[in-house]
Image 1 (spheres, rainbow, N blue to C red):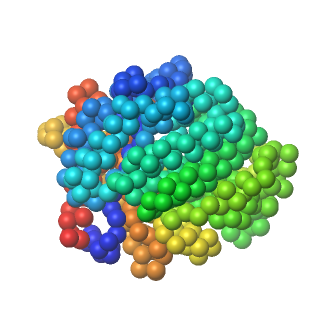
Image 2 (cartoon, rainbow, N blue to C red):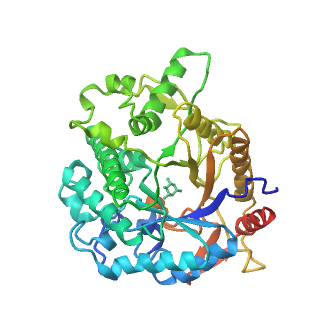
Image 3 (cartoon, rainbow, N blue to C red):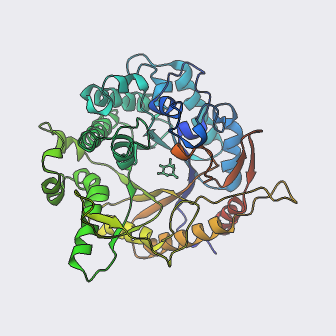
Length: 445
Ligand code: FCB
């Protein structure tokens, strides 16, 4: 496959703080909700936690070389709020801030452009103890954190994202309870989603007010929801409900449309409490929208689901990675919709990638063969290129992930990396997909 993307198209790789850093007790860092959750027996696969993870805190220079060797021009990572603000707000922990300064300098010295995410799910535990995203003080603390980070790093880091995957923060963390903090209350989850969205707008305003020349955005995840039988009105309604719950609930307010009317009606008394001015704050101008895309779903009408009336239907003709079905066209559909229906002027795929059951070659301990991942990436790159050719303003693509890491509730049992991590030795081995990505980038130079 040739690299036919435009010359200034940004290719990169992505990670997040808790999934790779380790060093949880070092440098003045206090716990986040993920430390607490992963240390609660039974919450993660094999009770895995991020205490050591990829030890990136100590190995960051080597990891920057891995990125450089891929030949990509950009790196998306997140900063740990609790490393920088051990109390969540107030006094900055210099040692924590210095880690990110060093990381950014190392990236720039190697001609890798940083894309920084402020919140990839690791809320300082002390803020959660005071009510977390349900407490407006957390929103103010996030605003302070965002402003401080830009104040310190804004001359070197141009690209910023406030939140990663707000649906997961709210619904996996506060309704399904399978992510930190592990709660199960839908009404609260909607209030959390609202708090997160308002905090996004507050942070955007704080970052903007520094007067720096910045590229500001947010990175929601998208799950295209198709009706199982497009000819059946009830299936179409089921798919629309799921779309409202997953995609539109977060997107519509971001572009100033407020919460979708059909969902407000459906949720009724479960709807979040909205303070005056909130919706304007959420709709603060952003420069780009990040798109995290992994898979799509098909829905049929179900009486069992009393709220959304949806049931997802497996698609036997689709192939699977280790944990999801594969539908590259869903990426195109998403990008097209964000441009045509929502009018976003700049899009980046901020995450896309696949998990496979990778193993080190028994005959060559420097090789890991992952043909499934190579094909997955090729097929998704094809859809991205199709979007670019159709004049959809897609400017970049970040593969999840630079290396295998702590995959949240799945612990280390699921591998998404382009590099294989041997967790006993912390050795990183480029998988065939890393070699493929490197060749692909080279072919465009
Ligand atoms: C996304 C997360 C990322 C990683 C990938 C596989 O939902 O943002 O941290 O877990 O899935």
